[in-house]
Image 1 (cartoon, one colour):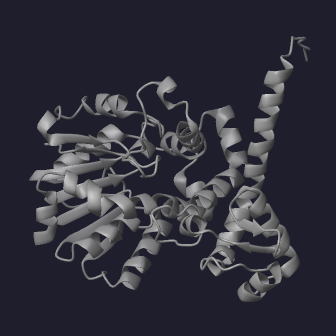
Image 2 (spheres, helix red, strand yellow):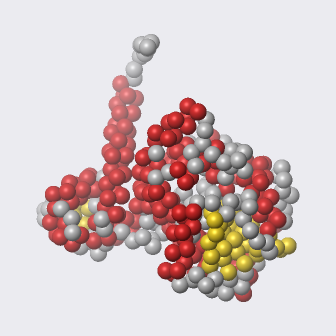
Image 3 (cartoon, one colour):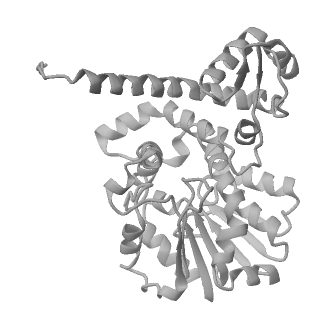
Amino acid sequence: MATFVQDIDQAKLDEFMGRFVQELGAAASAALVVIGDRLGLYRAMADGEPITPEQLAQRTGTDARYVREWLSNQAAGGYVSYNAATATFSLSPEQSFALAQERSPAFVPGAFQLVTAAIKDEPKITEAFRTGDGVGWHEHHHDLFAGTERFFRPGYVANLVSSWIPALDGVQGKLDAGALVADVGCGHGASTLLMAEAFPRSEFVGFDYHEASIEHARSAAEAAGVADRVSFEIAPAKGYPGDGYDLVCMFDCLHDMGDPVGASAHVLETLSPDGTWLIVEPYAGDRLEDNLSPVGRLYYAGSTLICTPASRDQEVGLALGAQAGEARLRGRHRRRLHPVPPRHRNTLQPSPGSSPVASITIGRWR
């Protein structure tokens, strides 16, 4: 192996190594966030009251020595607050809102569950780099499915009913009166159930090719008491059954499809004459340099580990990626779809105070 002798700028190297230490600590702590979520450690601290490791262990049925190390790590990372005078730990209101309250629009442990699951599948992705083959969604660790739901759900809770649907001309009125809705690529059904709870006169059908996710979604519908007008079926995006849908939704899944153009054509065939297609995709600029940011980094990582392999595993394998950008998405679909008149399309940028990873492109396709 060749050895390269280069002039090193010590200040730049020190800066890089400082960033490395910070990021290595964050990477090593990801599993500890998952542990804190899974064992209820954050939830047991949600009231914000000071607590000792022994008290937290007793409250959660865990071992105090492990809890002490966990709390120390969390305090070092700023995820938990520490009072040296009393040797107690607590969650601030903001920490509690993000770490202990699952219905919060800022809830983050699901993201860590997703990431740690993706890392477990690194050997499969490494081999895919060598062969060019895909790795199907169904081939991933089971935590990826739950983590994905819990990662995206806070954004849906914050925006779907209050912002995104009202941005579509006439759609909210239809849903209030009673509409037929298809949620394609529904996964565990979080988006489907949120809409069903908000619009009790409408009927909803969630479709996904992943059998285990559909089974979970059906159980969730039963638990929510909406199974009488919400159903979940195993079906691919290019072949889901039915027609006359007033609204077809695709939440954060179009870029994962092997043949998004074919899926789009199928949407047109199943919409009612005045139906609407709602597309939600991760926010991205149209050029790589527009996405060289912490958010872009996160999504390029997810795209490399999850989205691109999933698309490559399917027919066509277009592999748009999680940072495709609106121009590329529209360009791909113009091959088979009519251009969208300006009055029927709307792109919403992240609003002040909203999650930077949540954005949406909305279009009415006819």
